[in-house]
Length: 619
Image (tube, rainbow, N blue to C red; front, side, top):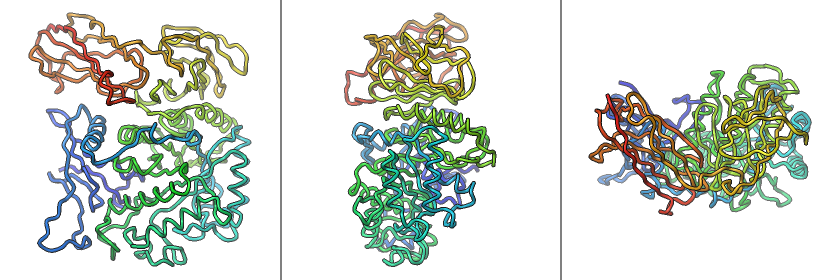
């Protein structure tokens, strides 16, 4: 009698705008996890399991289906998963392997380095100043002052500015608001000269009387009809006006596409210009694909960011946005969203967002989002909870920004709450540590740059590297080596520490210590009674998909201990003698097998390795 589902329309779903989520529903049974997903986007807005049946809201009366014609709904795929998180991976892999989607790799996307620069948005401070939306105070001079104050207080300049709601006179119109933003092109050119990039906030679907879509007659009441014959022309005119460097245009660098979940409700829509082009989720896909395609024609390096981690949308966006939190005084919701996004769309960057920011969340969210994505800042004077922002807080934010911006683009991996890693095909790029309180970035093989946001002993995993020196402001800093960790006693919050590493043939060109090959030694203890520990190492020069499974003497799989991406390094996992249903296995002889697949070169069979050892269990 329970209900679980994905709903695109937020007035029903109320999931704080994280939409569309992956169209895959996971279920736990006594036999384990399984998932049911949509292979194609439907002419519907909901995919729900309720009262023992699956439901999608196809509105037949709007679909212009010929009588006596067979209509095929979207195919469903069934996958059987280790857990609910693995269900997302299995779903995406199924879509790719069966050619339902295309997801270009990060290397194929050729990501510009400026996309990794921190984001600074006007929206939070607009609210703090009481000038949200079309308030008279939100104008050219306010934005210029806001940027200058952020530069000064952060001590950092190379951020991307998001000009938020409402810089234009009408929603749906690409022209700046007269009076308030007469000099928007001049402002953008000035920001470019200072090293900034500028994204324009865009309210998808909405159109007001007087706007371009109203003039073109492509609206359905106050919402745009993306199936109208003139929709493409509308997008071409809009993206040209906002992105082109021609004198009459704005020369912006991309868009923060907001409110994509306000697609027309098929039940309420009055008409579709051509319903065969898409209704519901398919109309949303058409809107975003046309926008993305036309924008890239004008400015190929423009940045398009919007919420929507469903794998079907991966090829028509550059960065997926986590959107607003859930006001729980915890970063758990953002981290869960980032984990979903990193699994469903691993080749996209993640916009860490941060509008609904409380004072006690700023540092842990900033640290983790600097590893799993691109960090954002929305405030200057006070947070969402009206707590004033002290200058020292923004100074530390600026220091974290400067460390974060050293990263290369990479894929993020969740290890545990507050513990994330980013890696590319060459090795480790960044890592968050110590309960979201510290961060390190590796720009090259000889250097790591670490920062802590609290006064503490800074402890950094070395992953086999050898430290030669630690510097702070070009001065030597005392440190100790404890096992495979570097310890900087009494590290100062906001101080950037430069860790110098000794060159080593076992270290990749970006400073990540690599086992020269995988290693799977004998478990210990063996034989064992309650639990046994299995150590292993991941070799190669980039992230590997690691699976470690237990088998019985008949070759039947007993359980899976590891099935996730891991960067090269040393690892360990314990087994308590239970099977995949958490039932105790009988005494006897078992085998464990490890398999590694290089994520950067998945078609290279030489990157797959298997090995077995005897494992004995006594009751």
